Image 1 (cartoon, rainbow, N blue to C red):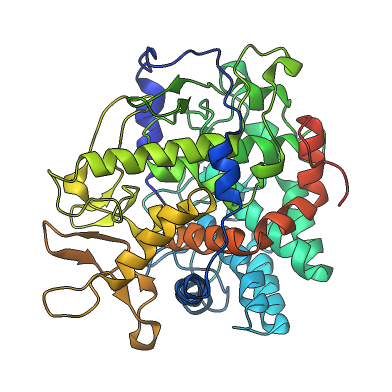
Image 2: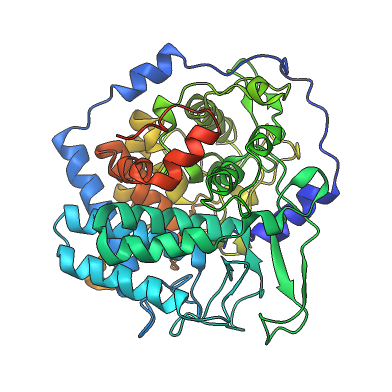
Amino acid sequence: MHCQLALWLVQTTLAAPASTQADQTDAILRSPETDAALRYRFTDADQALLEEVQRACFLYFWREVGAPSGLARDRLKGPVASIAAVGFQLSSLPIGVERGWITRAWGEQRARTVLKSLLERDDNKKFGVYLHFPDLNTGGLSHAGYEIVASTVDHALFLAGAVTAASYFGGEVSALADRLIADSNWKAFAVAKGGFLSMGWKPDDPKDMGGSGKFLEHHWWVASDEERLIYLLAAGAPRDEHAIEPALYYRLVRTIKRHAELPPFVVSWPGTPFTYTFSHCWIDYRGLGADDPRRFGVEAPRVDWFENSRRALRTHRQRCIEESLRFKTLGPERWGLSSCAARAGYIVPEIRPSLRDVDTWFEGTVAPYAAASAIMFMPTEAMAAIRAMRELKGSDGKPFVWRDPADGGYGFVDSFNLDQDYAHDDYVGIDLGPMLLAIENARTGLIWKLFLRHESVRRALRRLQLAGGEAP
């Protein structure tokens, strides 16, 4: 959900301000501080807390599903599925099995049900790219979401989950995922100037996905987190007529900025944390090192994307600390302003440094999943935030931002604000999902290993000339 199209409509119609904060030729290379963070070891107390958080997230994806489709609900209080949330749902199943919350047979059956529900219909996709919001119960066309669009970014998140489930369960699940991958015609969406991918396709008649329609004029052009996942999967498409040129991945704009004396990094359009974490839920950038656009004739800085995200999230936390005198919610252990459901509706904070170069604090409203998802890069700071939020009490002495699954909750609520004395009792699939996957990767690397194991991913890495394309 994350109001992607609304956010990126702005992105593609306003000129990005020129960066004067950092040298645009500087490579973003692995630092000793990041190497030290990768050596972090969780204590037994850490592990117990993370287990509790993960299980609560998992239960949402297991329980909040349509029938008979098995598709994950977009949000707890919503009437529709989200294809992006389904990607996180499919990735949650191996975690549930490995942690003993469900049997392997149950997980495999759920994956089969979900994939069949989507594949067996013709009214939920265009050029093999699925609707942002399919029907919760049938997997088909739905009018319950805020748009009827075959969305490239949401399809990429869905496909990443299908790849993960395929690697884990094999058999029929793998065969179904292979059909999804083969059917995904990314090149059909390469209609923007320079061959960049459109954000989606919209039917002229909202009741007919098989009829005429138009590609959205707005496109993906910034080297932000979700874009890299889209272009990686598109570069790895098994059919030449569906695959994009690998050079497009490197032509995504890389603009380097910094805050004060903190290290510089390639910024996203809004600067919000999810734009630095989503692709890392699947792509293990730790071992890829700094890429090299010049191999593809592109003059752009080399970037170690794991290092880049760690710098971005460190900077975001520091900016939250600096604003703690203005907003009571913020501090060293309460930070992370990211897209979420809040008192004002669905909000998308924007925090400098960014391409858009604005601050929109939304009165300091914190989304717990933002700091929790940073655990892959900043385990010390993320653990402190998770523990502080879990222990935070309201004026009634009860947990302020935690709702126990035994009482119908799914762990951390989607957002909270101490100045407003408010916690938003809703759950959003694409907020719980990255929290669940990021924690698992930090603990065991499971999702990273499963994603990299798949031939479509290794093929993409080979075409992009990145490490990891060889068979494991």
